[in-house]
Image 1 (tube, rainbow, N blue to C red):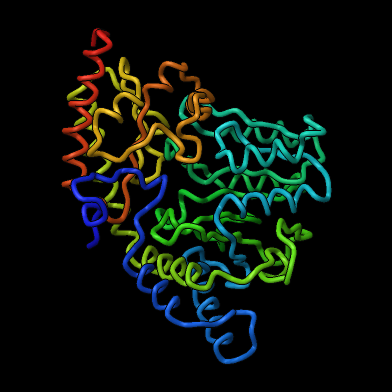
Image 2: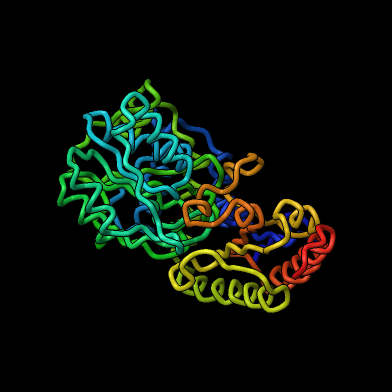
Length: 390
């Protein structure tokens, strides 16, 4: 098994929600593709060979989601996929409904689309566990004229899951489309699109061990949705995304999807066990901690822990041998506290004292043991420096 130590000696990498190390299968597939030449849009043999590699990757991603390959549109990542989904649905008019804990790729897109008509954006609150209330969605839908409901499958900061089926059913009953940003869930928990009736789904390959810069948008066959491309040109990907296809990246994404699919059940159990070991040790040894989110309804390898009396940036600085995060990697470094934790009712001080650990397919017991020892040492050091009683 490839571990993070082979990528960065001595580092316990617990930041899979930011990006996962590339799986060996994905690396091999991408490198093999790089050693050949061919534009997937060309009609000669090299072009046809490239197109066949893209078709195989499309099938592998579709198998992971249990959908048709023809429903997969390749993109540069989930951010682009989210933009495509929301812009296409909103292009015919109507209100956008989303939640206060979405990733900025959804929230900022929704705000941009409704900038000239702020009333056309309805934000759903969450409870202290980070869960969206179905009654709240019904109330928002009752105002009418809703184009799309967009709710994430799993939160990138807390790992809290969303029960998509009843929310999608409510949206459809009101005549709205339903989109989910499943970036953090794909490849970590099963998603069966034959059972969960979402219209649009976004994913990013690097979250489950594929290359960065490749994602996909699932568009359910038969829905009434005019495509609204962000990039115009040759009409690739059925007109949704123009430009020469990234054959090597797409091939790597497909191989990662296939590898994740094969080992999913085993990895869920193993990574959950490692996460639980980490949590229990830190809470027991440090005290005055809070685990954020619905404890029984989270991604297997994710924990968001508030260390009262210890600012997260100071803790992370004090443990350079552990890769963890204050929150979303897409907004880390920003001076504002986590909008997710604030929406869950946490104070700014609590949000600023929260560290996210996220494990994945190559995480080991050694990684967890190192993270436990380093985090305990770092939190105690920061608390002592700040002279805040425990």
